[in-house]
Length: 173
Image (cartoon, rainbow, N blue to C red):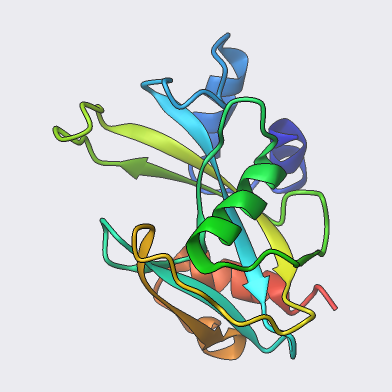
């Protein structure tokens, strides 16, 4: 799945990290991997498809797509759906494609509190559609806030990841 995405999207930033990790023998889906592990997120388009739901991250205080770590026995898609339900209460989403919508590879700073060294997150993103127009119910234990942002506004975002996903959103329908 990850190697297929990289082959189709060779411009992926920090792809060299993932290519090196794929060659290794470790389980990239195990959170205990100290160098890197897979996380999963949901890029959720509104009923009208003009907005996307982003959450304010509880630790880093910036807006991202809802997501988190993959639990043992889960696929990345299952983890993304679970995290969306846990963080913003959306449980009846249309999966727009079972393939990876976007992949972001980024460093996470060391956490003395968690006893974790600096490591990489390989964030696998899936595109979902809130076709029923469900209301958002924020879990304050998971995120600080959530808001619908216009896809067209994100096309001009300073955040390269959000800008890239906004551009890809225009090709979904």
